[in-house]
Length: 124
Image (cartoon, rainbow, N blue to C red):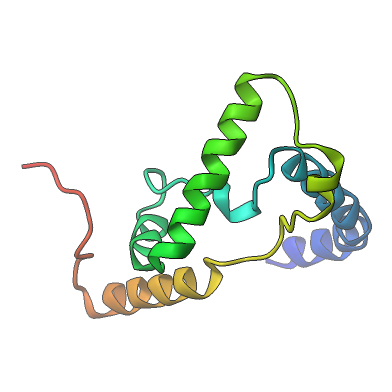
């Protein structure tokens, strides 16, 4: 445990310096396709994300699907959004955080109580 603290003290300043550059690079790539960061979350990979997506407002979900369709179309055509449209994109405008946090809190509570997830996949 003491070794972990020493490593954290060593690498935290480095991570703090590199993180904004990495975030800017991610934002630049997302803007090319008109995506938001949470549009990349996969409901099949994380069941909590799938449950959070099911709880979203239909208008927000429709906007997410339209952004994903546009990004796929742009990717297939090997182009990117025009610069004027890239300028108005907000890749880090989060719409799923609150709902996902609520779902994860419910999952943690269920785990403490020893109950299973209602949306858990089980093989017969």
